[in-house]
Image (tube, rainbow, N blue to C red; front, side):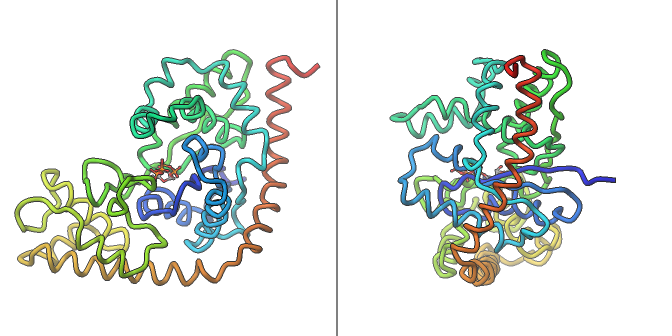
Length: 327
Ligand code: AQP
């Protein structure tokens, strides 16, 4: 029996943070033997917020290196750069013709990003979820492993697949979300009410995988905590819940065991141990990351694009036939 296909990606907007790792990539690593995996560096998404071209070039390579250093096996998974496969933009345009303005206006990421970049509320930012639907549908994707923030976008991809199929006949697989229970929404260290984000204004919001271990320790020690000093997993203590989740994701220990371990001890002890865990994880990750050359990932991306193009071209032929533009 053939394996089910999964597709996912990360934008090369900045350095990946532990939220991206726990919410998405860790999941990819865990399931790479079970599924037929396609992972993209989604650069066309990244430009919906202005990126300096020289930074973007570097970030594309960095994201691909990060995939490898975190444990994605390129022999098992297809890794490619989104803009190398022109069918993503082509299918996006076709799906635009069946997507509704009202649907896109409701998207929370669009609202959040428009609010944080009022000087650049561009059409691409608005259309981002349709491009994401194209990314997914192009590859006959059955499941999409993402963090919780992408759930709304994924629902749109499902709706567009269903709508297209009912207008033009069975063409797209309707993809299922694959969102883990724990670690799917890591919150900002400086604000436990907003998700950790690569482009947050303060670097104290996130732990980047390329932060120096010392820097990362400082960020954990400075992370906001809730009132009181008791260690417990309680919705009234969102900052502590977030730190406990990070601890659990890094150590593999279940949260109730961690809580038990720190009963009767204060936040100080807990944060100190967590900062050590984070630092050790970064040392290990960065050793692997630094051992990968630019040439190695460039070669990998070229090969990946070739394979991705084959799948995407075939799907686009079918789409064009179905909508009547192939004569
Ligand atoms: N805080 C988070 N907790 C858990 N998962 C998260 N993801 C993002 N933030 C968290 C998941 O990471 C994957 C890649 O995200 P992305 O680069 O496509 O963009 P994003 O969701 O917009 O992430 P960021 O970090 O907030 O980037 P910027 O600031 O550039 O927009 C996705 O699967 C996402 O769910």
